[in-house]
Image (tube, rainbow, N blue to C red):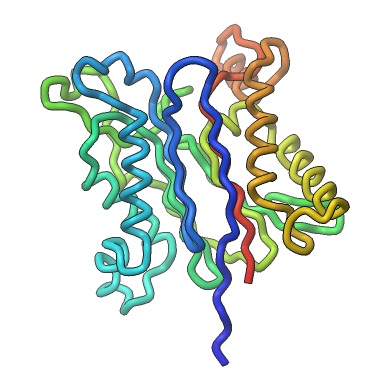
Length: 285
């Protein structure tokens, strides 16, 4: 009897900043997840028809459609891989499809993750990111994570689609799906995957993320919330997003963003107010 391939048990939380439109978007399925973070500074071009929130949402919709079984990401890659394309190739094809098929104007980072068998592949553009965690007797540890893509400090790589009347006169750097960093790595049942916008990583240090996950999982086991030994991923995503949001409002606490700012010679303290999206996904049978 053929073994049933693992799948993703996911939960997602998206928290908007206090003022302005939330420009994050995401999707979740049993085999793939994605996050897009619309570039808020593009709102200055709204009179030209730029709508970054709509652009990010459309990228996610089209990426999810492309990477679904039978979608264009599969048909594009099937011939080269005899019907078994690696997950990172599928993720990259989904980003290409989303970029090519988009109709709204805007700019956004993007990260798409695909689980195929016991391997995960990711295509990541910009400063959204992912991490994979193993559970040990001492708690969770990060075994794989993405690296931010930046043209300069606080200037991430990004997909961009602008109206002809504006063009690149906005002075923006134009990146494409071809600039994605692609990752592929093995996972096992019980691993935890986090996919997130920079609102999480700019406000919580990795050691704090691990502490929150350990605490939520321990409490869930004690209270019987979740599935067996696994905490509800919706609870995990919500707890991490809320913690990042609280830090983003703190004007005096240290944060990864304030540390990076000071390294660049910027006088900045506290968290960074931003939209915050966290997708937490367990690898399950």
